[in-house]
Length: 359
Image (tube, rainbow, N blue to C red; front, side):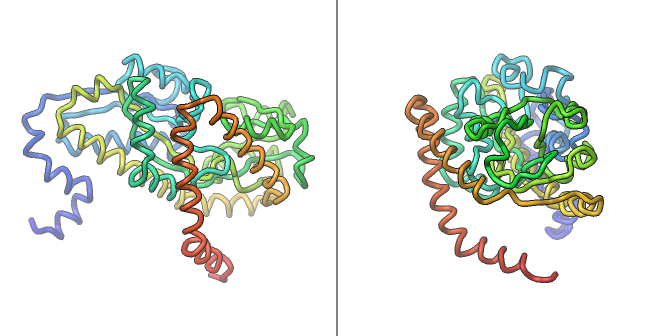
């Protein structure tokens, strides 16, 4: 078979598998379980772990199989860190900022308010010092981490009333993910931790005043536009939230070198696929929401300026008391400054021009 036929019929995974196949033929069959923090209804995130497992199986000729399990099947969504750390499961797919309560450093493997965007996060992880520094952090938890997905910049959430300034946030009961609450509570917000399945009912009953989930594709599935008319952007606390594959260190160490390479390749494949799904699914979903009379509005700049200042205060305070955070954040922040300086000349200018055109 010629090279063109291989690329056409097998794709990247097939080409990689073709190169590795002779080495894996003699390997013993391995079975792992992956615990996801996401429900099966999320075809983007849960679907990403399925894509990962499928590639591992394909690239090993079925010798390495990983079964995927939705949140709640093997353990709660927020129990996967402990599950991998103690070896209950070999691996998990999750959003690391869920675990900032154990150590705020986990959030730097996902997203922090006014942090890196998706491309910048991938660059810092793979070609900067991100993966090296975070693997030093995860080693304390008996875990090997791999980047495995990014949603891109998320939306800012659904509000029952219009937000005209930062003053409108005071006393607001806002369902918002983890680490963002540290900044928002300084603006008078009362952060609420509510599972995705309860968001609609909580908004409908007025138990909460606002809620953020992910993006148009996922938000549309929850029907949030039916109970809150205002849809704000951007989700400045999630400029490029990265998902991660957690692998138990002992289980990883027991793998042959070829299988370790395959884990690396398959997780990188899923990393790209998850972001690609969001970039394909979100435009039609947002158009559908707009057609249903959703009021899509930007957050006031004054509000974001206030939030930015509070975020910097939070980071300074954390650096003073958490040496682990400081070590990773200092490098993260330096790259953030460099990346945003560069993006001003290339990406931002080009994107701004293109988005102003009638296409």
